[in-house]
Structure formats: structure tokens, C-alpha cells
Image (cartoon, rainbow, N blue to C red; front, side, top):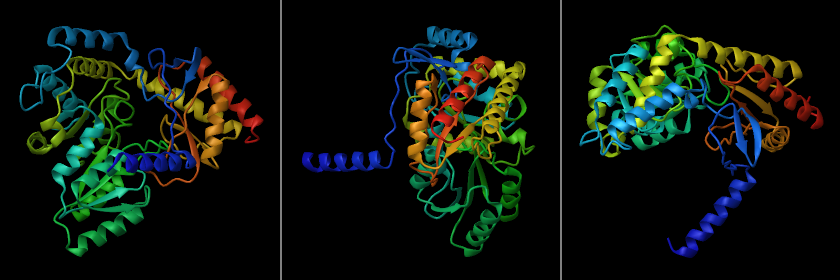
Length: 397
């Protein structure tokens, strides 16, 4: 591609993205990502962070990161299969396996790496994947990389999943069939109908794959995720999670059988060819799990704040969809209205961003509000008052 051809492509792509309202503005904070953030010299109520439990700012977790960095260094020094496996990597994996009640765990540099590495390690061009239409972009990318036939089923439609699973099974075209779903869907905060999915999987011999990025630390026993939440421990083949949302650090993990983890250690590209998690991140993640195991106080507060925000926004007349979790969407008739609403909230001292649906087929615009365990009632009340003011000024409520 010549320089001129590249520039023409860039100009056209950026113009198209701008017209489709897909050019996200990147905000640069002047502080930690807490319930209050500093931006452009202003303090704003932060409703766009996935720091669900406030662990990113937790003193114990910060101190654990410092201790691990001082002992092991700033970086791990290599890939896991060469020189980058430290004893604390294995300690973290053991703690994660115990947390989610599964045989073994493998960790990656991010949950995105989990999805693009693990799906391709298990599925290939002779296989098929049944994927919910609202699944995260990293799942879609992982499916594409694998080369498997991707069969999308309607969002959370067990009827459509059953129909398409039956068609794929009866076709005789595929060696293996996998069904993939988010545990909690990040767009609208609804929870996957996992019992029904597992029932279909058992009936038709499907591999079950659950992405718990927004479920780890949020649902299940002590934040252990979908397996314990649905009482399906031992019935999910792969449970994927992140260390970067509720756990407040960075990294991802895959939980499953010992044989599965042994295969991934020898076949998944991000594990084999990328430098492993930094010691500081590993030490911080271990301490985050320690806190989860102590009590459910922060998880309880997260859910309390989520219920409170939902109730008050709904009372004002906003459409908050069908969320079953602290994720609180406000749904507008178009992306343009959502963008304008977000800008007006900013003027009122509230930072609440619009989701850009480049990979999810949704027509309406959404602001995704993310209350956390470290928001207090006065912060949420300020945000609610801002919603009321902007909603009335724009004629929405």
C-alpha cells in the first residue's frame, strides 16, 4: 500500500466513523480512576469505570503490588514457557482455581488475550461455534481467528440457540461444536440464561464457554462468577474472567479441567509468545482475591448502589432496559441523542460515556452507568439530579 493509498484509506475510514458516531473521544484523567475523577481541571462523578469494588484504589492492593515489584522486579523477564513463570504466577492461579471452584487455571496478560488465544487453541476450521449476538468483541475476534464456522443466535434466545444447535449437530459437518456466551452482558447488564444453555449443551454434546469479565467479583459466592451463581460448578467447560474490572488490576484467566489447562499451556499463542503478567499485577491480584475471600461487604455495597441508581433513574422516567446487575444503561432513541446527553451531563459534573456499538447490532444509543462500591449516596444523588436536569432540558422526561 503506497503512502497516498494509505492516506486515502485513513481519510475515508475516519470520515465514515465520524458520520456513524463511532469516533470515541478519549479522555485523559489527572488522577486515579475512582468515584471522582479530575478532567480538564474539574472534578466529576465517575460513572464510566469498571472499577466495581474500588480495588484499583485499595491501599492493601496497592501495597501488595509494591511488595511484589520490589521482590521480583518491574517485569517478569520472559514468556511463561521460557523464563517468565514466577512462583507468584502459580500462587495466583491456585487462588483463582479455588475461588471459582474449578480444577485449574491459566492466566494471561488480559481477558482479551484469553478469548483470542483460547478459542483458537480449541476450535478450528472443522468445528462450529454458536455465539450470542451480544457477545463481546474479543469473543468475536477469537472465533474469527479460530477459523471455525460462526453461527450467531439471537441474544439470550434459548429457542433460537436450541434450533441452531440442533441444525449444526444434525448436519454432520463439524467435529466439535462450542456455545459461547458472556456471563453478564456488558451492554445492558443482563445475565445469561446459563442453566438453559448448559441443558442444551449436555443434550447435544456441546462445549460450554462462558466469559465472566463482568461477572468475576460481582456475582457468585464471594464474587466467584457464573459457576457458583447458577449452581453449575463442574458443568461449565471453560470459565473466562478478567483481573482488570472488579479485581482492579490487569490480566485474565481461564478456568477448567487440568487437562484443558495443560493443553492451553502448550497451544495458546498469547501464553506461549507474550511476556507474562508483571509481578506487581500478580501480587495485586492475589491480594484482591484475599479481600474477596474475607467478606462480601464491598460486593453487597456495589449491588446496593446499583439498585439505588436504577430505582431513581427509572422513577424519573428513563429507560434503563432489562439490567439484572449494577450495570445501568440509559437507552435513548439514537446515538446522536445519547452523545448530546452525555455532553450535557459533563456540564453538570457527571462523567458518563456513550457506548460505541461497532460490533454489536443495536440501533438505539446507550449511556452505560457503572456505579461502584466506593460511590457514596451523595455522589449518586448528584448524578441523579444531573440526569433529571438534562432530561428535562432535552425534553426526554
